[in-house]
Amino acid sequence: AAGLTGASLPFRVRTREGGWRWYVVHSRRAGHGLTAAILRDVTLEREMQESLTDLANSDALTALANRRGLTQRAREIWLRARDLEQPLTALFIDVDHFKAFNDEFGHQAGDTCLRDIADVLQNLAAPETCVAARYGGEEFAVVLAGCDDPHSFAKGVAAAIRALEIDHPASPCGIVTISIGVATGYPRTAHGLDPDAAVGQLLERADEALYTAKSQGRNAIALASDEAL
Image (cartoon, one colour):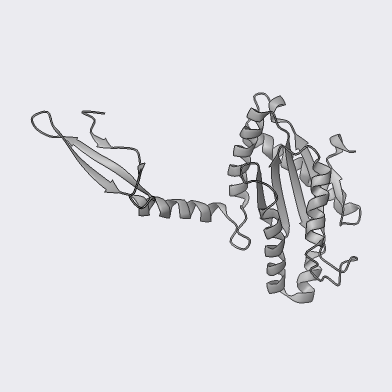
């Protein structure tokens, strides 16, 4: 706006080559009713900032979201599900007998196993509807919008992990398997509830269901108690 002094918000300009550059305009009033402006290219600064944000929100081993990244992305997915009146499903996943796997093959093989599982979880659904995260150790979490049959979805995830056929002599199946706890909520009914709190409650219910799955002998799927089949 004419007459304003200071720096503008960053904005982008398309280059002749078809790419984008980011700029900030610094302006100050000059004499005779004129304004002096300097156009500063901040593309590199912005890319560095985005890269640092990605690092802060990502798990270094698997490249999935970490807990911080899960919170941020799950909030966005929750809001989208609320606007579209979709259900929101949380999965808590634990790699069965993972300590025994590490004891048998070593931690380097354990890291490779976790990365292979992460690759499956990374591609479960479109990014705008799903986020997968490494929650800690051998535990993963998934938040998914618009899933009409969470139990079948969880069965598909478990089958995809078994299909990797990662050798695991200490497992009753002889291969790596997972246990899954599942919980579903409906954002449209959560009036007045903060999205972060709503997602947190959903993950807690999924975590409780995971304990049920593990108590059933592992390589199992359990739904939160209030939605058991």
